[in-house]
Image 1: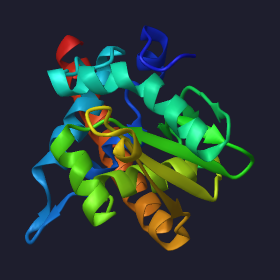
Image 2: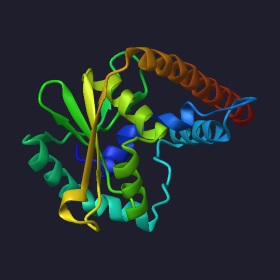
Image 3: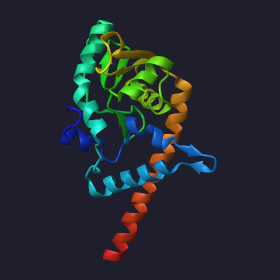
Length: 207
């Protein structure tokens, strides 16, 4: 199924996905971050209603969606490859989790495309670094697909042609993936517990 469609949204509902790995892994000095609790509540609500949560979309996100096909073509040209677009891919061993990569490349690779504002793209060009939240997203995508590397591709048509595309390859990190898998299992167990507790409580009230 195509990403962004209603069918795709329903397929992801109630499941831990790659784009939210930073929320699941969020920590502070005193424990887990608030974004983890917020995401947990979101999944509980999706499980109980069977409906995907409403997602806020700002102008920057709309711009990124519009530019993604153009960015994909630029990446294919630069890397002399074909990107295979896919839908939601379940994790091979953790139920209720998965990823929706921007595309598969060859037999072993994939690509994660970002179309940020000009300032963030310039920062990527200068520092050649990838924000941690995207590294987590990419590693989870590799965990779900079995792929061995993922290219981070940042694209901005606002700059001269030679500066419009930044690509950095990230290899699979099995140690990082194992840590993430443990956190996801614990997170999903909490989701299950809250769903069960709420269901039991309100079933008793209805009896």
